Image 1 (cartoon, rainbow, N blue to C red):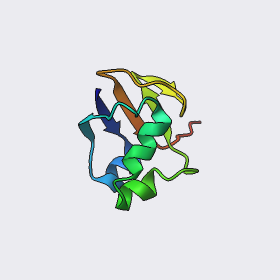
Image 2: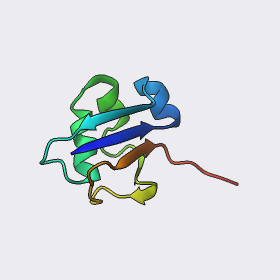
Image 3: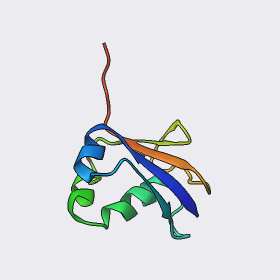
Length: 85
């Protein structure tokens, strides 16, 4: 399955990447599995996406949780939580 991943704010700065297209292995079916898979890249990836760190996720512009399913050609986003006032 091919997806596009977007990184926002501090994640974009830390990873040095705004977007990428990736071919995801068949066993990566959820957002949680994708986050874990990306963490395996090591270095800044492991630190930025570590379990327990507050990182929001979205699939096709809809907020997503770790159990949310991935679909082919999805646009996935990772971003830090934001507050407003």
